[in-house]
Amino acid sequence: MASISPTHPAIKALLRDLSIGLVDSKCSLSQLIDARPELLVFKNESLKHFWRTHRFNGAEVDRYYLVQPYAFEYWGKTIYRRSGWKGSRPKKDYESFRSAFGTFPLVCSVLWGMMDPIKTISSSARPIHLLWALHWLKRYTPERQSCDFLGIADRTTFRKWVTLFVQSIASLKLRVIIFRRRREGGSAGDRYLTVDGTDFRLRRAKPHDKKWWSYKFKAAGLRYEVGISIVNGHIVWIAGPYCPGDCNDLTVFRSNLMHCLDPFERAGTDKGYRSEPLFASVPQEGQQTEEEAWLEGRHEKANGRFKEWESLSHPWHHDVLKHQD
Image (cartoon, rainbow, N blue to C red; front, side, top):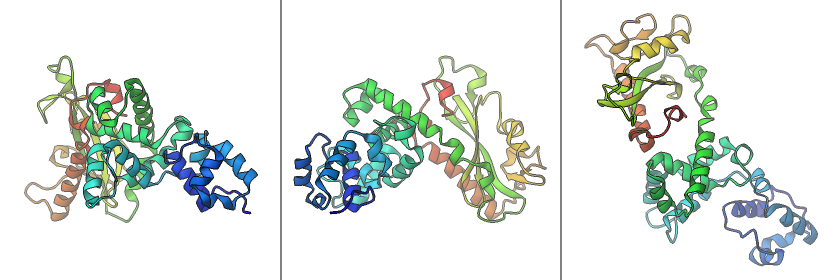
């Protein structure tokens, strides 16, 4: 008889299916063995103790098991109420997943591992709660509409888990956006990042207040400064929010990032930064090189990817201080 180890394939499969709801934690040991005869390899007393210890303890379950991408596929299938996730058009299913949650199951798995919700949020946290938060960020619909789509009866429960997970995602900023990473991957002369400002819509009771006015879409908004590494393409700098009526892109640049650059280092910018030639590399009028055009296009594409999330493309109607999260 084998001793029970959380790394044993049969135990890993059991913990995995228990964590995503494929195994009922209320079933008896005999019912469990009937459903999983491969567990008979373990000693009866050891298996009884293991089952009594783990079946109701979510923290123990997830301590030994990192939620895999197919678990998020399973919950996506449950939300969509489909008979099976893998059909004749798997690519269509992944497109539907991304349209509802903003990303793919693999990214959800990586995000879960970085957040470690069992320790940082609650032992009751489950993968489906992360999907609730991602759906809210992606669609940014009223609570009633989101709950109808996700099949949630209690809006208070939905609001609780969305708030906790969104805050947890926001707390990863310092671990993901690291300024020194702009140099990782090679050398780029005196330029290691491109910088540009991007605006997001804001719903204000008095949109005519000039400090909130964004000329980019003729309405109230918030402005952020985004820096992308030239060498590796990582987002390495985000500053904001700023009031677009009070701070143009150059003012924002002068207030912070300009002082963080190394000696003789310059940031790749557009013509709006030409007043700072020692810190900003501005293309010559009508003489933009192919590389500069490609870098500018990549940066604009990154700004566009932000707007794919409707919480950033639609007017923000929550507290302004929460927008930076």
